[in-house]
Image 1: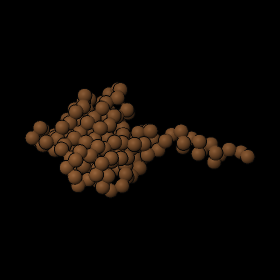
Image 2 (image 1 turned 90 degrees about the vertical axis):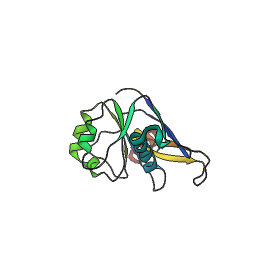
Image 3 (image 1 turned 135 degrees about the horizontal axis):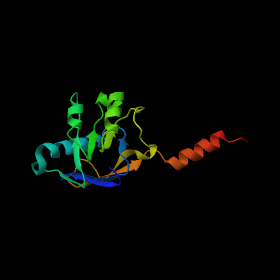
Image 4 (image 1 turned 30 degrees about the horizontal axis):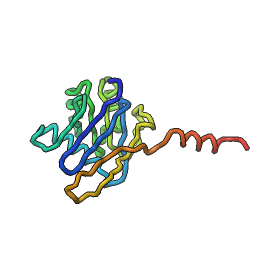
Length: 164
């Protein structure tokens, strides 16, 4: 897959609106920031469609893979966006890294771990930022933000390694 892909996932209480720029995107952050809720909403939509009360808008098919049957699940997707929640230990394996490099899918992986076997860009590591309040029936909009800024990292590296 090439290009950018906009994804909107929402229900009556919460909305996620983000754009994927590369084939591997990492979501990180503290507990209770909404990472798992995003995955659960996509899974509900996959299982129940419109009856789930989740609205999923994207120019590509979206799906979730998990558990020990991940390889079989992965084989069912092509030219899609695959979401994987933390707790799936297969994301750390060399086997998983090899399998996803053979596909034309985009991947959104929720993890607090480093993924040394995957070729992802530091520019594609995000956290979820909320505006609005939980606990109300009012819509809560979720946005992604960069956890690392490549330009500030480069400046820090240069200043730490410059000769005085």
